[in-house]
Length: 318
Ligand code: SF4
Image (cartoon, rainbow, N blue to C red; front, top):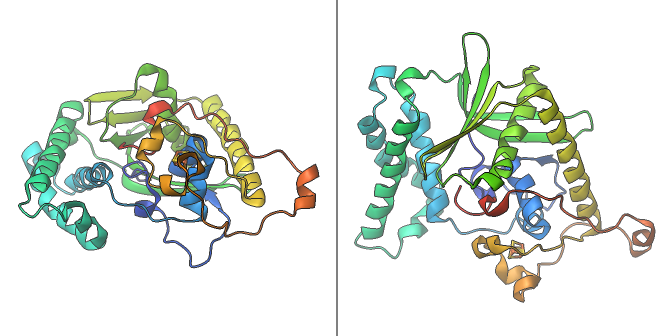
């Protein structure tokens, strides 16, 4: 197994497959995109169906950078996985990131003196350093890092994602770890934060027939660790929830009825100019829709199941 996170970057451009030339109906679900639909069906449409471009954000990019550093640090022998070593990886990983995604140079295009960039890199250093107060990488040997996982449920729904880190104990117990560069959610939003982890646990269970012993969210922004020990009933519940979600997505895809759901997370949304809630107009729907006659007897407009993600939701920095 291996690990990574979909979450570093909740925006679709970084980790999802390249956009097809022609719009096609969605064929699989990842935690981020499931979160998008639960947050706002129209946002899901803009990201998955229309594939509207999104500007890179400093916060999400910093998350990507920090994840890359934490992943690469495990290349070093255990005794050398120190905070100074990790911080020394930042410039090289930032170069590598810019090479692979030239659009990131836009982030600091208006910063000729490099002051903002320097501050941003210092913040990344702080996040990396904080990790050492939460975990001790000299005592960890991940079984997997940045693991792409994919499985197909009996219903045909494909689930996919990237897990940051998978640890496997000598006894075979599996721990799934995800790094977040934001702050831990308030307790009332913890369930939403754990949704992504239960999603991964479900995929691992389906792939390996092993229920992960522990799910662990490491919040570098606030220095918190949130853990949950799932049982099979949790995974069965999340599977039922995902099937309901997928049915709602299927209906919306067929009818073209993607309702906006405004929340305070709209402040993070790159698509306000296309959103009716902000006086905008969505682009023409690029997929065929069910005929008007069929609509009378068809199902009601798709409603996104409640996410419970709260303000910890998918669009802000993770
Ligand atoms: S601005 Fe808000 S309501 Fe509109 S698409 Fe974005 S998230 Fe949805």
